[in-house]
Structures are given as C-alpha cells and as structure tokens.
Amino acid sequence: MSQSHPRISKAVIPAAGLGTRFLPATKATPKEMLPVVDKPAIQYVVEEAVAAGLDDVLMVTGRNKRPLEDHFDRNYELESALEKKGDGERLAKVQESSDLATMHYVRQGDPKGLGHAVLCAAPHVGDEPFAVLLGDDLIDPRDPLLQRMIEVQQEHGGSVVALMEVAPEQIHLYGSAAVEATEDADVVRLSGLVEKPSREEAPSHYAIIGRYVLDPAVFDVLSKTEPGRGGEIQLTDALQQLAADATLGGPVHGVIFQGRRYDTGDRGDYLRAIVRLACEREDLGPDFRTWLQRFVTEEMQQR
Ligand code: G1P
Image (tube, rainbow, N blue to C red; front, side, top):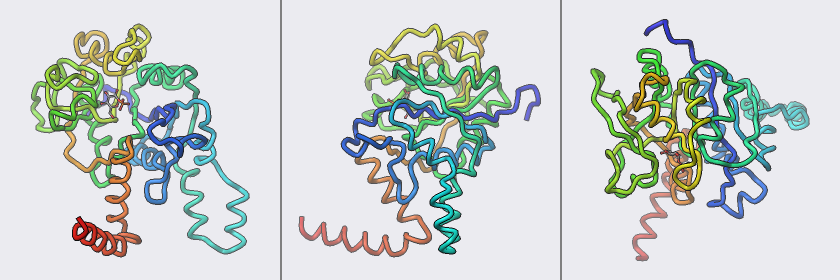
C-alpha cells in the first residue's frame, strides 16, 4: 500500500430522499428507518462503514429525518428502564447504534440529486478522500467491498466506484461504465460513465452500485456540473468528467463486486432482502427456513 495518499476516515451517507415508493410507511418515518429483520436499514450501512475503518460518519438529511439522529444517539429513558429490569441483552442492542461512530448531520435543503447531496458534504470532508455509501444497497459483511475499494484508492489515488455485472434489461436502473482491464482481475479503469442509459446506449453490463471512494476534487467538479438525467445533479456525470480528464483529480477505477448485495430500494427487493437475511440469521434462521419451505410448498400446490 502506498503511503502517498491520505488515510480515509470519513463516510458520507446521503439520506434525504422522500421514500415515496414506500408510502404510506414513509409518511412520518424516514425510509432509512424501515426495519430489515429487526434493525433499521441505515444501521447496516453505518456498520459497514465502521467495519471498513471509517468512524466519522456524515449523514446528508432533509426534513422529517429526526428519527435518524435519535437512532444513533443515546436514549437514557429506555436505557435506564432496561437497566432496572436487568435486561442486559436488550440494553446492549439499544446502546449498539449510539456507540458505533461519531455521527454528524447536514441538511440538503433542496433535493437536487445525489451529486448535490455529496456536494453538501464538502465543508465537513475538506481536502481528503472519503467514502459515499447509498442506503438502498446493503452489502453482506462477509463480502467486504469497501475495504477493497479503499485499498485500491490508496494504491492508485483518484476515485473508485463499485461495479456489478447486471442483466442488460436492468442496466437502465443504474449508472454504467466503459471499462479497461488492469493487472488485478477485480479492478478496472473507467474510461466513461453514463447515468441510467438505455440498453442500447449502455457502455457495458457493469452497473455502479452504491459505494464510492472519492477524491475531494469531485467537489469542485460537482459545483460546476449542470443538472443531468431527471433534471438532477448527477454524481455519475461528475465522475465522467474526472475519468475523461485525469488532471482534474483522476483516475477513476472500479472494483468488480461478486459478493452478496441486498437491494432495499423498492418493495419487492426490500421483501427479498428481509427473507434472505432472516434465513441467514443464527437466532431466527432455522425456524424461519422451516416455515418458509412449508409455506412455499403449500403455495405451489395451490397454483
Ligand atoms: C444512484 C446513482 C446510480 C447508481 C445507483 C446505485 O441512483 O445515481 O448511478 O447506479 O444509485 O444504487 P438511484 O438508485 O439513487 O436513482
């Protein structure tokens, strides 16, 4: 690992979205707080950042996001009630989220897109490389992706995105990248990026999944990036500029991820994520799998 690149310690988590796909559940509750089994989705993401050594977490929030701040703060009333009851196990669960990381919050104000959300992090991040984790993607802790991306950033400098091969009919849901091989089988160099291309326009089958390690030069580029797809300031467009002109703060590399990723972005994927994670849990899994098997068999028989 090269020593010339500064150590990465900050994670930025954009969490200002309205979560309209989950209404009415998200009318008064941020979508990031929806439980995946028994933990809010956002806690998995913060745990992933911490596991990669990033203990300074900035959440970019908006209106109605107070529950996020409360979740990562102490809850003295609940803690003392559990203490009095001698319920150490639940007390530990309550304290886990407030002990995880140093949390910071900034509000996005106008929701002008992911690029704009990242730009809101500039004063906090300063002149250091940093990570961005999107809350809709959960990465299985057994398949450490962010650690590998940080390693690649430390070796090559510039920025690093996470890529995953997807079916051609899925590519329009993601940013996609034109890639060139490097000496490492799981690392590619990006020569072009397009936000949510049609199947025909897509430069490859590689989709950007929601993990980034970014050079701070991205802030300067973002501040000059015009609204793109959907009328929003797109992070993908800023990365395209960094990839096209390495003197701006490039290069841009991609780590090809082949591990387990759970999408909680829409209702179907969210349900699948819960079922998969519940099946794998040591405490709940054995009973739940037995029930699920029986349920599926009965369902099949009825069709
Ligand atoms: C965002 C990015 C997109 C990326 C995706 C990953 O899109 O703009 O490039 O592929 O996250 O989840 P969103 O899903 O927020 O529309």
